[in-house]
Length: 272
Image (cartoon, rainbow, N blue to C red; front, side, top):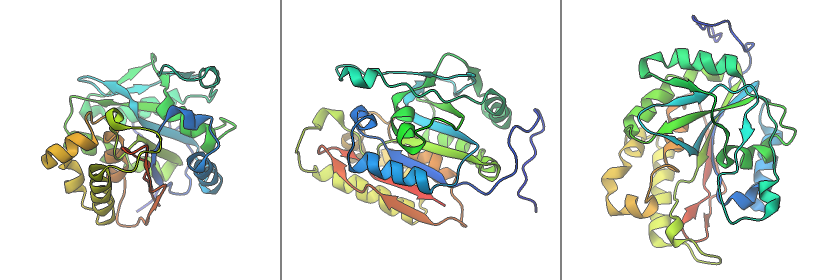
């Protein structure tokens, strides 16, 4: 069995290369895009140690769609400043990476059973560029994003992601960006971790370690615990995409295992 992937609809846009890891980053506050702190330093070290991808596919908590999954086919994705009440220095940040419309359309073809559609109206939201500017500060790797359909079930998201496993063999780094606990209603400076945040973060660590991906998809059954950890589920869904891309050959590493500001898990993980 060969590792070389053949795309039937469009001409291959990537050369065969080493199998890429898959990565979930807890991105936290937008300010971490410009702050020099333990999180941004870890992203810089990680970028220096990862194999150089030929393209990056980002699943960010901040591109939400309804009823359809979109893939951005922009030739030069715009830097989206999708936040308010932050210093001007954050709004001044640009991440001028190229897109990869050829590959983006190949991915649409791979996902044709899921009725995925193309879009050129997005770009790179802060869930993407706030971490990418530390991972790849030269913006020298093409990047494109996939939206999360907020009407789809967790099982559906997992199924979509599993269809993308072949990209790992072609030099594509799939990056999920969100937070495994994300309750903005209860964040505060110098606030100790809430009990529910510690409990839910610990559960996700166990599920990921045990490869219990059924439990990961069944998190809504936790009821009030899930509702406290995720009043909205947009920051949780990207973790499903990364878990779905793992297989039995992968090792797992956690890092940034911290509850930030009381109710935001910065826990990140990589299957490699």
